[in-house]
Length: 369
Figure 1 (cartoon, rainbow, N blue to C red):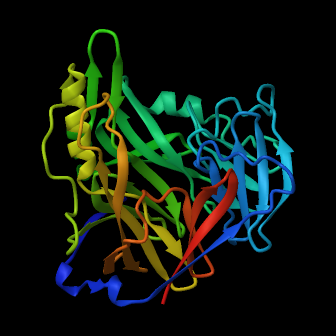
Figure 2: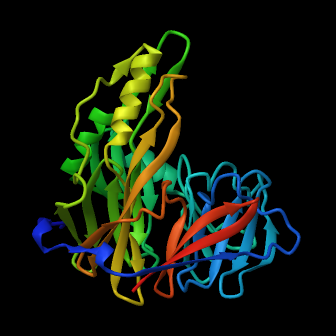
């Protein structure tokens, strides 16, 4: 049985990260003459549990680039099958996750799959699509799946209705095909920030980002519209709800917007206003220092109308620090960064952030003293 608990952090106790010193450097990966897949900004990449290896899925070939992060060099490139018994199809487009040893979790529709680094498909999730169809109600989908590497019995995700409403957190037991669902009230706000554009010729749905991540052996649910976190802790089979208050920014998007638009200029203005408000990325775990980091940002756009989607000119970027119990301890603006952080992770106590430098894989490393 999952118990919902709520924890609130008072901003008066937050330290100012700007009072601490930062150090940055940049490192470049030796591609050994290969053209690495950077087209998707490493959105289909992941880092191994021990922090030694980066796996980058080239979804277009398809192939898996294996990079030694200690020596900053490509060590292998494994071709994967697109079709056939070991074919990845479109799996991996939603990202990949290292599960430990030689297992990689490929996110995708209608269900994720598990492969090894040589492209062989595991049979452990072969019945997941059928189980999902059986246990979900008509009109609902079980999506955003993830698993905890030490738990082979359960798949975790979100149950929702298109186009992003009536969200519930779900735990799907693979042994007895039982779906346990629990409301996550914060995600009900997502519907108010899902903007549909339809002018009779173009139909476009712009939705907030939702993250369901396996972080430090927990399942962490978050979204781009709010700082709130839902954390599933398997040792107690409990879902914990954390809310926060910040000194430097709002803790969530606050304005209200029309959700159905047919005029391109109105869409331009709504999109610009919505994304000028604060947005949040999921937390990342620093095992050396037993703490979490989390970026949030406010986008900056051009003043004039030029096309339906406004042109982004920069961003104000902030970094928050949480202790191992998800309590907010410090926050600060990072004026050195003027764009939204892309693919990033922690290795040896340093935050590594991907940077494409003249079509070479590079990382800016941020060290907080």
